[in-house]
Length: 485
Figure 1 (cartoon, one colour):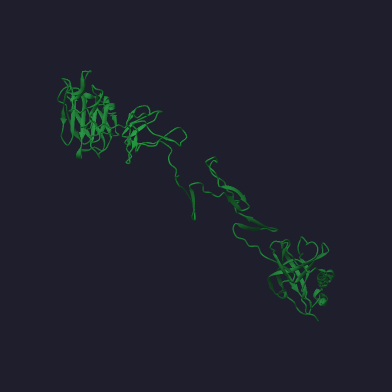
Figure 2 (spheres, rainbow, N blue to C red):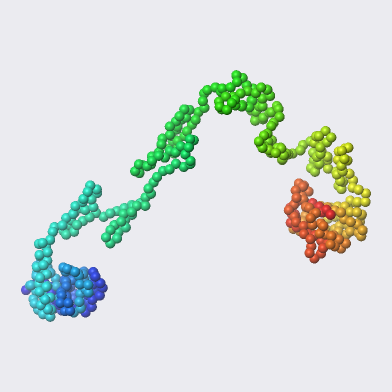
């Protein structure tokens, strides 16, 4: 008697969904071989019967999750003709069997199916017959590559058709989906263009694109032009002509060349006094220099400059024995003359048109003297009388002004180790209460060595109206502070 595997399967649970169904049940054998769940293998066939629909369906085991004694937990897929039952295997009584070329279901003792309906037993017995019919009526499949390109079909192995796999490298990429393999490329569609505005003096080298080939014009050397290729560059050299200059038969050495007519090909000489440029670059003009059309004449790198409107700018004076703080004036002959600086306190006095201006002592009744020269300072005052004194304590300078004396101006010179940083307070005393505001717009600070103005500000005290404050003093240089009433 044949020992082909066949038994009952009592299905207690069905889970999952198409195509993979999870089946849980118990294996029973009413025959002589005592089959259990551990005898079940992948590929075995489960045939269930739906009492409600009156149908039988065939399923093939693909995975055995667990098998112990009669308990079986497995995964099965549809293995029948027609449309798969959407509800999957049905819980209840079913059959499980293994079909081979050596045994047929008809050889299996009917005791194995004693509790299975006649319909299920008949279907199991016909499994081998249908399998044989399928083989007899089936085709021997093969494949072929169409067209003249590279083929992807290689051969068949049994019932398997074998195809080559697709590989790729950047910029190609492959994206598989359920029914397709999409081939994409990130490569650019290169083109070429000529920059700049094309015209008579600008010509582009890019022409067209033929397939993947960018085409450019070649460079051709003309008269007196040579081309030299290197790895990365093409060098263009232009050599001078060998012809003679068309012009006068003789010329003045170092004379500045000028054109004759507007052709740009003829040169002409001067009738006299030709301007020249020496080998050292010194230009010599023997007549007047005329600047027209709002032009500008610059001499010695801007030391002397006459603009297009005839204004003299950036001019330095050098009349002989010049010194800082000199005064220049026009003398009786129309020439520029120098007046040296005067002594302390003198004023510039004019004498109508009879003589040159001069420095004169101040008018009678006005006194100029040193109010204080201690502690490294020198405080000079000009007043309508004498007796004005001054002293400095820290950053505060205090004046003492006698009754009836009017302080006209004061000059405070601070130097050495007594330089001031930040602010200095000027206290004019009680007699000047309410008058200190006249000092605010007339107080000036500058460097003694260069004469440059310091970036100071002067403010009036809001609590004591006889005081002013000079802000932003710089202790890194000598300060001269001048206050004029």
